Image: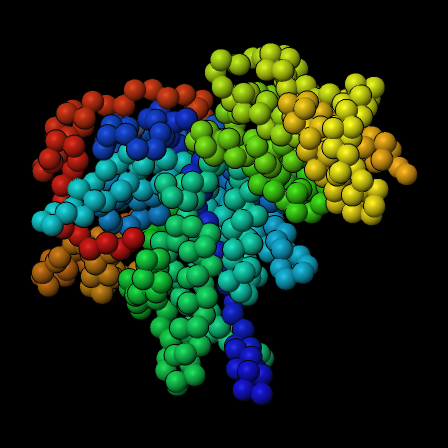
Length: 486
Length: 97
Ligand SMILES: [Zn+2]
């Protein structure tokens, strides 16, 4: 009863949650100048008069940034505005040398889309209000006596993806970020490294009782991982509930999440609406996207992870779990598609990838894109297993060798031959071996005939030993049963 | 429309500029004059004319995504009032994120 009361109290308030996600675009150069976007590097080594906002310089928009924004928009079911514009958003802070950020106000590149996320046992659609392009700010390094400015990241192209307030739980936030990240990775729009800050999210949360108007909204920043976003959301909902239950008043505030301590604190209380004195950026010409350009970009969209998972289940009979694991990474998913698409047994391909391949990539510290073999090699290996030419432990061995530089470019078949890993599936040869083992172990054979069925495993073991591990164990088992029939 | 001292104070606040009372008064007066002068444009008949945001009729002016060398750091920092050889230094600021 006490528990039921707690549950009722927990559902007294409804949370309304919307996310603003910033994703750094995977362009080689910055958004308005040719400086490198490489992460890291010595402080202020990727900076020019342009991205420093020196007088007399002019920005020139990176074509790829617009393409990536359109691509993200199409992948998120947005309407692409045929005419959009950049605006200056003014604020004074040392990480922004120009004194304004070039962004988009009322005419973003993309509007009115949606993203489907897992929610409970079902799915739910989260609306995408808009996606616009803008520039990133530099980084401040706070010292004891002063603050240092590193402009390497400054003016790197970003897209800001603004969701509708359609989420209502920490789980929704996690699922949304996960689905969004997956799409940005699949489309190649961003590398989404949250730990490097190339994917960041701000979480807007308010709570209210059913039938009552929306509550006061807070905005939380500094979420550096999906799990931090989830934990921070749970914390903030609880905090707001506590304040209201105790008869307190919530303030509109910007909060900062401290993931180590597992709590948030107030960065500033908003007394007035933010005033940025936006105006159209006069140095950048309007962005016009034609239907033909949209068609060309749409043609470059890959099959999305959700569609892949459905295809894997329907066409290859994989379980939902396996399909989910395989599609976490596009490169691994591509590898599976190449191998299974070439006709190799799908389940074996999936097992090889999720097992030995994933393990070895991890051990070698290689990203999946750098797996040292392609789908056709994997198909050949899976076929060898499927035909019974090699055992699954031999397949592990071959996979290991595929990662060794000395075997670079060698086919699994060649490796099997060179290492003599072939499985003996020659029925007459195996039958002869089994006959010998039965003859050499009359007592065990008698036990089996007498009803101790598990005695057969000792005999299988003897045959495997005699064949130096190369006998096909399934066949050995069957042949022994035949021989021992009373 | 006259620009008030309050507006001047608010803008100065956003720009993190401190103004004396006398300065705020003077800027309010000066900017009001400028505003009145520029405000004459509003008297023009603009019914049916699309708003213009740019002085030239160009669109979609892009560059290709090609990296070019940045400025050597010594040159970059040369005119900075304060630097430590690798970055610009400012008086300590609070982290507003
Ligand atoms: Zn630059």
